[in-house]
Image (tube, rainbow, N blue to C red; front, side, top):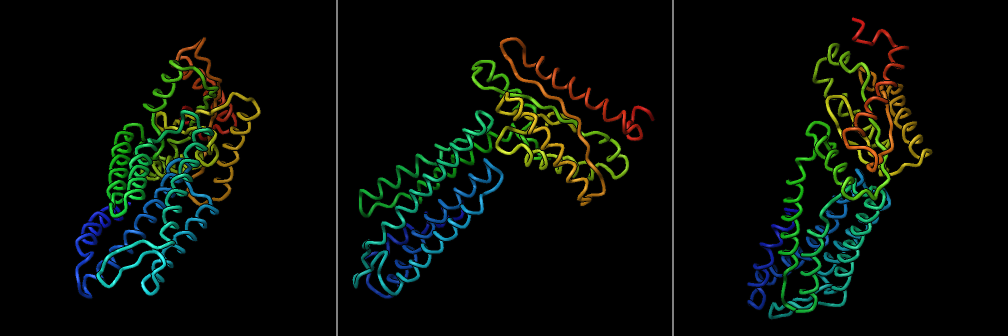
Length: 341
């Protein structure tokens, strides 16, 4: 997206300068830069849709990916055809530029992709409550204004600049957000957990259940295979938890080999289903045998009630319940209990 915005901002003034200049070279330059501007705007917005889906959900659905690929393919194919038959834009004998009927195709595609990103955003927000956030308007507003201005006032080209402004805003927001991320696993960190809980204290509108997860015998992995493999185990555990929880909540690395999940529900069936899914996903990993180690977890759950308990109490309860589960694990796996060594 940054590359497309940069090259578009360079191509736009070159195209404007060459329009109306006589000769074959100016004609070639106007065709090339105008084609690039159409393609770059469409590609930038399509990459925005992909980025947002990956950022909020961890992946892009196969159906959406196929749709994006088809739309981009059609758009690029029309621009190639336009080099021989003016169906998108026309360059006359004086090298002056004018739009043709299929110009509307790119306008519709750009706006439809922006709308699609809005749907993705609000879907994720609905599934994740305050546990998913992204300054989507930082990207949408400049592009929307630029698109409207360029559509209404023929000859003015501001979309490349609008995209550049949008990307700058997104990068600034992502940079600020880095304080809430764990560098090793890529998960949100303890600071973000406390931020969410304190926010819920002020506006207790969400039904949240906390799940504390601790890796059993993690020291055994470090001692046997080294800390590099131990770090790999933490990264793998983070991915397993993200897959198991999905959009139902937010996974955070609390400390060391401890993770906390905030589920956006207090429904007993949904909570139990999530806990079961977590255990099944770790069991599946162990049966797969793709790593030299196995991963075992202890889990503790508790429904958040800010009317009767503080943030510290909430953390202490899920921690205590996790340790109850850990005692049960070591009762049947005494050989892994470092406390007995």
